[in-house]
Length: 393
Picture 1 (tube, rainbow, N blue to C red):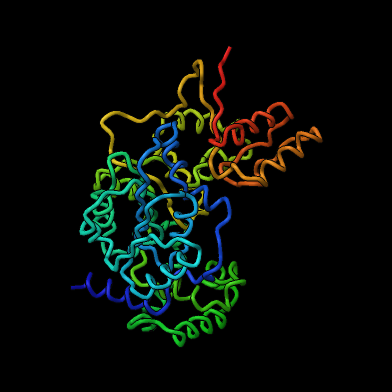
Picture 2: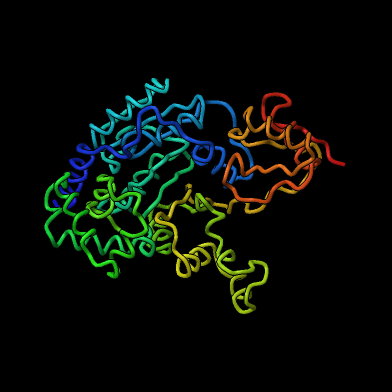
């Protein structure tokens, strides 16, 4: 009964204020499209491009107002997209958004995530963004999603970090004790939160931790609802997330922003770690390395990850050995006229090519000379496929 009450509360909250509150005409930048492209996690898992053939089947589980659904549609041309949410009002906004941008062949289902099996189909890519931490039992939600994940499919999901969001959880408890979350919080309750936080002494820990760093959001009432007044919000640690994955028979692939989770980068010189730390780190599993990171430093609000079905054989963790007639590819999100123009300009001027002017992830150094940068041109535009067959000596 308590679980049904929470789900009903969430439904009413998002019927009242579909999330995220983003203008219908807004579009995604290349970083967002890179993250939502099936190619990115598939290559992280298999070190090869996805097979061509039948159109991808993509599920946006908990699509909200459809802003992420739009990224999935734009980043995966020709894919068949299914959007699911428990809020009918949110689905209406999502439908309007996708139609505005020309995506009309999309299915919408008013359904709780735990009942996704009722759709009766499997999906190659499942996106479950900003949802699991609100469920009464995220393990049940993960298991439901695993049940509709294709055998070689990829699931992207996330949960709130117990460490990074600790102060917000304290604030939520304060306003629960004040009775502001007994019903469905509206503008009156949000304004009470705003005035209370504003009136606190500037030296109080709660104000320092949750209010002062976010001065640019103080006039955004939605921000109060999604933080101080968010129903069902919970936090997790990396070991707890891995336990949830194991319970759903899912296998971790990597964090979505994996370069930002490298514990070595928390030291002044990542290449010269303290001897004891370097020695012990070499024997640590991916789970332990990630847990060390969050214990030392917790900047990530979300533990945001890709996973797949648990494999009988371990997936390759290193790129395949070089061999003759190797085929090289440029990520589809980088095959743009603007990138080509900047690349040709750098080559003409003999300057290093700054790839990160076009995409922030993955992080890397500029290509240091014209010869290396020039290798990108045939990868992206030689035959329209983003591939170059290069016999090796």
